[in-house]
Length: 263
Length: 276
Image 1 (cartoon, chains in turn cyan, green):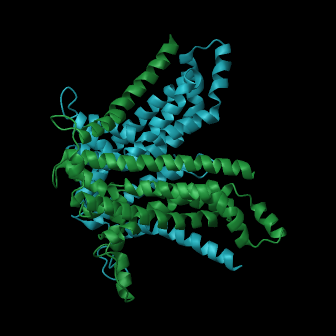
Image 2 (image 1 turned 90 degrees about the vertical axis):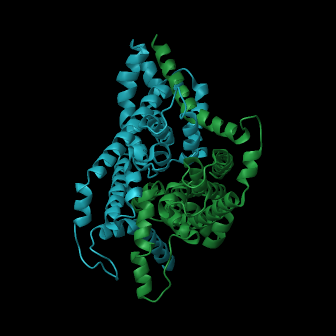
Image 3 (image 1 turned 45 degrees about the horizontal axis):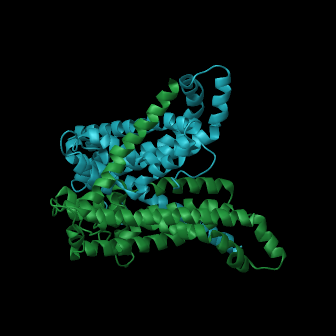
């Protein structure tokens, strides 16, 4: 039927639209020059130059550290908080969800404006250091982390599990560490991967709060964009690969296909 | 004892959020409405300067355009996926979910490779005698934004389509209704709240986007988020008061969009409950 054909072609076009920028970026990073329909030649020069640059490795290391710290911190806060809220403070559940969404109203650029002004003066003059960037990114990835933890809690029947454990004589700390944590951890980790991916690509907070003082990978790429296009293409491809790899991992862990934070 | 411990963590968490989320927000409002001597509206007068007004105007225009285009293209994609096999749905739905979150420096650079001064696609367009696309122009920026707007809309619409049972279509056909009539009388009314709410969310998504446009144009495209960034980092002009006022304006628009989106979700849930 004609409609089946139209529908399929549309989906093929969507697939091409989503994948061609990545593919082209990869080919560009591997080409000598590209001035006609096809690249003039293939070379690994851009990639080897990139891998030989110690600045690239330190920037990648910082981004890696930053995303691990921010996601680790948000999960460390959210798991006990949701546990306590589920058991003792159900009235706070709505407030918690509300706060986790508040970052949509204060995206990176706005949050940075407020943070810089507050943390530029003693006693808390930590603007310009990773000590402000880490909590800022933690707040930035909170909607992702909150979704991950809340979904895992919903799937785990936390209330019944806790009651069962308590009737066997466990106290709250034991319940949290030995019953709830192992149950929710797989869900939290697979959802947390998306938060990791978001933190890894974070640009606005990094640029405005630390800038060159603590160069992350996106900021390094931004600074070197104009120097060598092929090398920049290589960094873009790495960023794509990280995001798509982590995203595919998160998807393979769960049944439904939405990896977007639906507010 | 352990109960106190867990409540202690809750308090610590709320303190953390207060310090790094609520306080900066409050401080912003305070900065926007005060100067050294007291309450003032001078930052708001500043914020209506032609430069800032153009930024606001550009941001609204770009966000409207990319929300409408992304909304229509994404809704069509979700509709096409609705009739596809679960495997296709899972695959393209997943791909969309990842792409929807992928904005920033790497995306900007990917589009420079495609449509920049020596962009690959521009050579192709040139080769077949068509006009090239200059991605650094504001008028063309919506093309880059579609990369995350279309998949975001697709992911937002998929659950709404899933609420339409495929046998409704068969039933309607059995009663003599053409597919067109079915979509007009049943499909679109059921989808409408999610459709409108998601387009509003797409508007907000574009309105607050900073990294992509900043990396693409080094700030030469005058939009609200880039202007706020400038006025606070002091690269081009330094006016924290005006930046705070602009940021308040932006936060208000985003808050409004979020409220509308949440209301549309409740409306959709009510409709679906009524239909089922």
